[in-house]
Image (tube, rainbow, N blue to C red; front, side, top):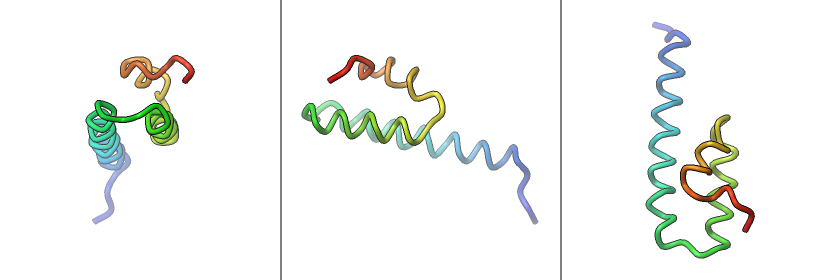
Length: 62
């Protein structure tokens, strides 16, 4: 049975939430270069990346 667009979007949201939670845990022990890599991954993952980065404290240039 084909899934509808709502189900697909729910799955995308759950995946984004899991990845952002994983990267948030990694940020605690990350060095500056690793933080910039994580910020770039978040930018590629989600359309609302700037808001997410601001919430994580990664919005200022490194």
